[in-house]
Structure formats: structure tokens, C-alpha cells
Picture 1: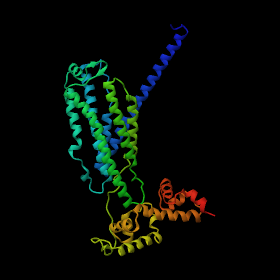
Picture 2: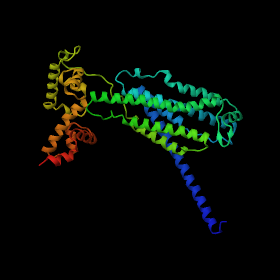
Picture 3: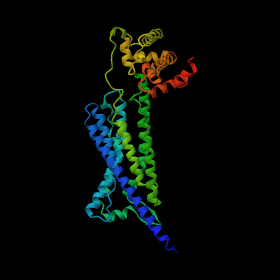
Picture 4: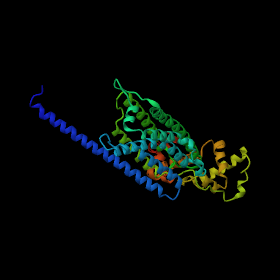
Length: 405
């Protein structure tokens, strides 16, 4: 039995817990408002872009799908029939929107990594097959009377929830297919991103705005979320246990929206654009024939001359097309020579010359490491340190201290 002195403390702790709960609810409400605001801004920003309209429209659809899929449920237990129907409709629309996120994100990845026309990246309708099934299941549930829905959805037996009838089985299958769907799109997206990374290193000498690792992290985070949500659904319906509280979902979705907005709104297709041709067409005589080893050796000498005499590598935005224009050699033959004769990608070859120049500047000048990085052709300090450590096996500062007398 509690003493009279302990009762005020218990009452105080109860009020304190209630106060913390109210503060937490307000915090979650603020996060919901922030997520909605960011989504609406991102949608408006994407739709106003003139360049790469179709790519930005896909991004706007992704934000719209995320926004709809994360709409909080309405409390309708004690509401009117209209409120109950509205709550049910919102939940079902949100449920269907979740099946659009995966194919839309995959199509967006295709659009920002393609070299060809964006029309070639439009997905077939079968990619939205699960979305169509979700619509059918949602319609079946929406038109069920409330009492019949309750009877069909659950039968309490020993504290466990047992799903019955075709509509409910369809919902379980859909949730399982969500995980399978995301696994498939994760694999497809990873394959596209790896292919893009290899192709970008053959065309460009820097990775600025071409590093799509942010998409990889979003895909992995979403994959983890889908698996946790599926486990939570199974645990909640069959074990009456919540493993993934809704509040944490709100925090996760805000992080997802911020990441997608922070990088997605700045991202543009990086392999697309007009290809430059050599200024002297006569030097493109090998355009329709294979390169002999002697021809590759001559092209390699011209490339070396462009680096040693013209310091072409010092252009931080140097691309394969630009080097082709400087040397009068087709981009195809430069790429073939680099791969077969020199044994390096365009990115690695140019950065090799940049690092050699940086080594010389580190030993012969008193310039700062950052100034040397810019002079050698790097456009960021992190890119310089990463490339230098890869080629020299140590940081620029360590190299200078170890070799400078």
C-alpha cells in the first residue's frame, strides 16, 4: 500500500510523463508539417524547370508519391460515417501510392544516367503491375460496409489475428510483393548505377555532380525500411506487437525527403549533351576501321604531348569530347587507345597527369595544398586527396614532408 507521502510524487511523475508525451506529439506534428512543406516545394521547383523537363517531372512524381504515401491516418473510431469513409479513402490512397515510389525512382535513375534520348527510358506498364493490383484491392475494401469489413478483416482467437477471404490474402501477398519488388528494383538500379560510373570515367576527368552514391544510400535505406515495415505488419497482425512505431516512420520519411530534395533537385542528366567533333575532319580517317598497334602508339604520343606541352589536364572540366577537339582525334579512338594501349580509363589517365604535376608543385613550391590541387586541375579538396592517396599511397601533406628537403 502506498504511503501518503509517495502519492504526490507519483502524481507529479504522471503529469511529467503526460507533458513529455504532448511535447513529443507536437514534435512529430512539426516533422509532418516539415515533410509536407519540403515535398510541396520540391514538386513546385521541379515542375518549373525548363531544361530536362521530363526528368524533373519524374522527380516531382516521386515527391508526390512519397507525400501521399506518408499521409498520417485520421482518427475515425468515434467519428461520423463520412469521416470514417474519408479516413478509409486516405489510408487506401496512401497504400496505393507506396507502390509507385519504386518504379518511379528507377525510371528517374535511368533518365539521369542515360546517354540517349530520354524517351528511351520510359518504363513499360508492367512495372506498375503491383500498383494496379493495389488499386483493385483498395476498391474492394473501400466499398465494404464497416461492420462487414471488421468481420472479414479479423477474427480474434487466442490473442492472434487471422486473415481470411480473398481480399485479405491479397493484401498479405501485396505486402510480401512490396519487399520482392524493392529487391528487384534495388538490383536493377545498382546495375544501372555501376554501368553509369564506368561510363562516366570514360568520358569525364572529374566526378563532380556525377557521383550518384547518394542514390545508392537512399535505395539501401528504403530497402531497410520496407523490410522493417513488413516485419512490423506481420508482428502487429499475428502477435499483436508493434516493432516499428509510427513516430519513427515520420522521422525516417523526413530524412528521406530531405536527402532526395538536397541532392535530387541539383542533379541533372550527366551523360547527355552534344558531342563535339574534331576540328580537322581529315584526322578522323580511322572512324570506320580498327586501330592498329602502330596507330595506337601514335595517338598515345599525341595524348602525351597534349598533357606535357598544353597541360590539358589542368582544365578541371576536361572531358573526352574536349580532348578530342584539342587533338583532332575522334573520341572513340582516344578511348580505344586509352583502354587497349595505355590500359587506363580517361578519368584515371587524366588524374595520373594531375597527380604527377601536383607532386612536382608540392616539392618545388611553397603553395598550399589546396592551391596546388586547383592548379593541377582538381576542383575540390576531397577529390584531390582521394586521387592522390590512390596514386601515391599517401596524403599530399605526408608526401611533401617525406620528400621535400
